[in-house]
Length: 304
Ligand code: GFB
Image (cartoon, rainbow, N blue to C red; front, side, top):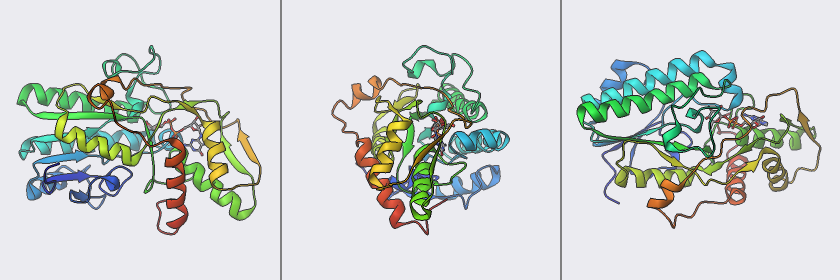
């Protein structure tokens, strides 16, 4: 890998950004990328050759349902500003993060890179999904009009150290780790939303970081690339693993008045594997163990 000093990472202290190589220039939320002049100033002053754009207003099912306006506004502004500033100030390569929720709700499975715009996203997170879809449109348009080598990636549900472990708005894995931690500490029930039946494909943040570094160097197509293990696991199985690794002896309570969200969203990783047939994904067991250890060891300073 060549020297990364000329690579700027937005969202540099977040879940993916913090796993990327430390020789990249990482910036965090000190820069309000919803503001065009701040974004222009950041990119013109650093003048990076490449940018990995991870910054976003993100959350799990709860966050997406509670903050629909903010999730739309913040993400559409951040993406529009970042992509335009990259063009204006001569960034040669941009890797932009989309999300697995960009896909239509009602579509034939498995999800592939060609199906992003074939129908409406699930209603639990349509503002976030549409804002992310527009980043794909902006990138395609800029490639066509300006001939820029800008690309995007679609990871499935990412988890790992440095996530946001907020109980209400976080993604399922960090929220459940935090809930189980508190249930064990306070000797209370471990309360889980929904039926436990929905299926998800989880990918460990360090795997996403490795794949992103590869994309930065090697992936140049106009269509996004899905970053996925293509292995589904139920929320119930995830809960069982968390209970096991946290050595929780109390009761698990399933809150069926809370939403299940989409039932499943299986994705096709064959494009990724056609480039990287030998890529070794971290197993969910190993990834969960590492994330739980990290959370316990960093409880005070973790985002929650
Ligand atoms: O990670 P998560 O919030 O996101 O997972 P999505 C939701 C699934 O986990 C649902 C169950 O089936 C929930 O019922 N669940 C159980 C919980 N307990 C909890 C809990 O305490 N917190 C949460 N959050 N879920 C998000 C999208 O969807 O995935 C985003 O909303 C983004 O836009 C992200 O795309 C990757 O997979 O449903």
